[in-house]
Image (cartoon, rainbow, N blue to C red; front, side):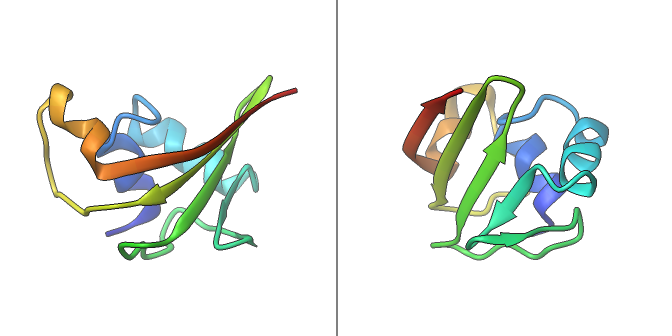
Length: 84
């Protein structure tokens, strides 16, 4: 699954266009490498998203093309949240 779609479906970022902008501006790393919106994610990948005042590191646990809001959190496991 593409990185931008995963961020939207998992509701880590609310809109796909915002997810695309974040990854285009090098604010998203996959397995410690700068990721593009088209980067293909696999189960087990470690993703780091840099927000304005915090950094979230999570592990991909499942790839679902669509999901209900209450099930979205099952797509990833938060490893660390860093306040900046």
